[in-house]
Image 1: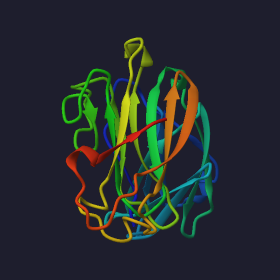
Image 2: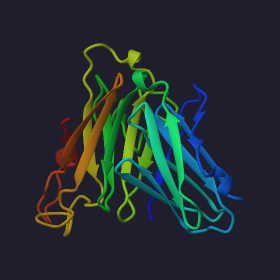
Image 3: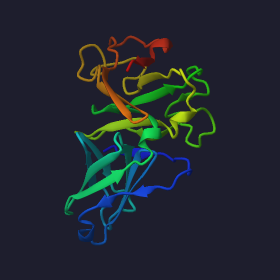
Image 4: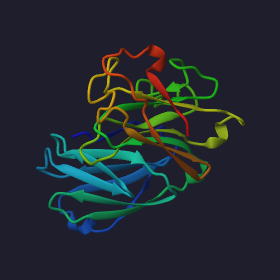
Length: 250
């Protein structure tokens, strides 16, 4: 079962905490819900729960995680509205409903790539003036989490989703005022699971040859969503390096 890995954010702003109901019914379960720069982080500690599942519903999306060997789990994902509601479901515990606001929502520039098929897809954000593979190509291999290079960072990096769940990777610039006027971003996706020489079901007419993707852009409080598919390639044919990253056109 794959969850969402939320990576570090720059400590420039205090996290604000969500308001949750049914908290008094959690017993020994500890719950913290917070957000920073539009990324929500749900942290749960529940004794004797190793391997048990946690599900979080956010609109039409479902994020799934598991308690680790210390009976803890952390699930992070991007919020795409200024005011948000989530439902947290833990086995043998009443559903916890939380409200969380993003006060800085109108200042953010955020790109979210979401998918639901059981595959790994990596997001590359090519910042204005940058080239693929150089500084400014922000990707899971170079997330720029300390903001030491370029404009923004990846603050959510996902793996292959659990059955029926959502996975996503998200890039954020904390203050869109730093983006030079007239700048153009380039978005690319690497379909990691199919490898460099695809075989069924990841090619031709296979069920996972062209998984659908949502590309969501938040800019100055405006949210736009594009529904895309990865390119469909032939089985057994090696992928040329210049076709490894597919252009995403919002």
